[in-house]
Length: 198
Image (tube, rainbow, N blue to C red; front, side, top):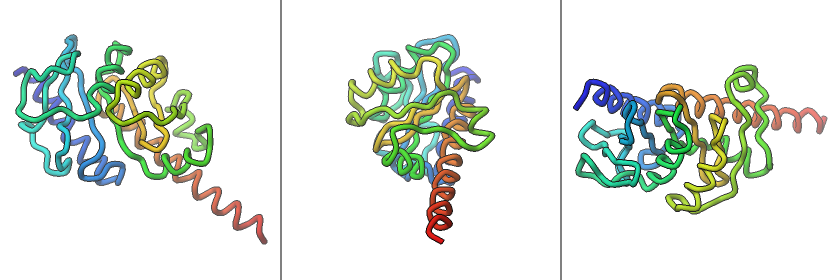
């Protein structure tokens, strides 16, 4: 195994722990993948595993058909979603799928997500909310692949958020920025309603 792959695996573990600490995933939800540079192989988090206790040997290496190349666990149920994105975007090497609670909440009552903070407005490209598709399904993979085009984030109604980037850190940043913006939107709406009642 190359040094690049060892680094990717460490980045995945660090990314999952960071998302858990920020409450963007639970101990069993969310997934991360990283493309091995210039290849059609991917390291991805396993399914049905405690994300807070993951070790390098728990990760799974798959090819672009979802076939296990290395590892003893099954890959994330969302492997199709990850592979679909990586096939559609050669510039993307890191994919993060989290379950941002505020973002999901904000989008349950709205049809659009328009960033309002300065950071989110600068970092996020157009963010669309995709209709609900069953997690892990081919339908979900297809709709995500079609809509990821020039975007760096997607919101899945009732399901979560996808962030993509040149590496895992960049993809994770996207997911975190969306959630911070959703929190600000929520607080602003609460205070606006409170003030308007006076």
